Length: 182
Image (cartoon, rainbow, N blue to C red; front, side):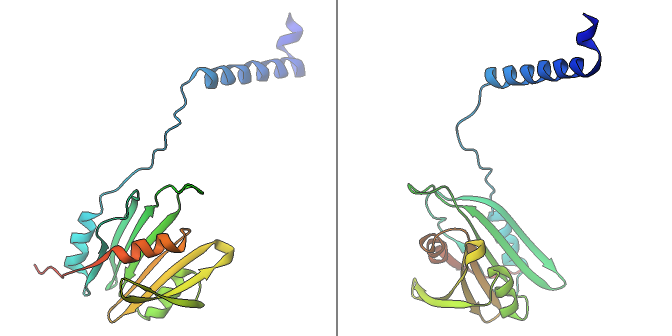
């Protein structure tokens, strides 16, 4: 019996016993098959942005059906006010959920901010969404599509791994919010 508790064979037996225990644990532990994506309420960031931004804030209303807001971050650093709002898109019949982000800022120069958010400076075309012209950009190696709108005082970028129709849905849902004064 002492041969199985010492040396190399003892080590192998101990590892196999541990792996067997882990396998048994995984076999009897219930595994959830439902998708769980944490959701955030971004209404507080909208209100904060309406107070601190020197520009008119744009936010989705309504959020496209089936989309889940997953992140929201409003910042005011060195006088540059930026808001990033991330989403998991609705499940598609032909694919999994994608990720799309709305980013807006008064960072100067505006073109550099747009290039950084889109991960490219190459404009591949223009598209009309709800009567507004957006630049289209595509970075193939990252499978990243972007819609860019340069306005006086604010740059708006809708970007991510979503398809063009998904980015267009978010861009089309954007409504201008009036500035709140204190």
